[in-house]
Length: 200
Image (cartoon, rainbow, N blue to C red; front, side):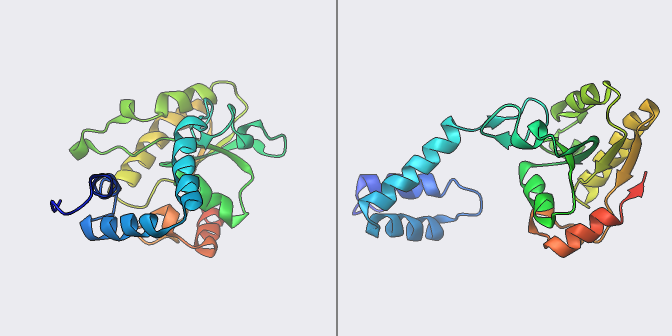
């Protein structure tokens, strides 16, 4: 950072540039925007950042981000507890919920199998998923991993270990672009992908 830059501003730019997708120029623009906002707005932003670190946790059932444990979806009496939709990340839950077409439960793996990145089945929440399958209530698992190599490898692995339990395993249809992420898909495309899921 230039010597003429005040230390608090330099620190803010440095911290903002650590965010994914935020380069040095964007970090500078954000920092100067925060500097120009009112003290109230800056405090609200700081409080929101603190809140996500202190007030959120992972649901011990589905591993989605939640304020309570179990989360509102797992605790709901209106959700179909016989169907579990398996996704890679919490943002994928939001994407599917936006469709308004799914009323079952979720399970968040927190990643996908990727040997090149050193991520195997033991690094994901797969053992916890299998534990959920043992109570006999679940009759279908919808695998909604992203349609790219890692997502496909994860889907195949899940089908291989869940089918022997006598549970129907389906895969969302490929109405989604290959190489894309669920969180960026529009509601109509995701709804069609859910409707056209197939057994694995």
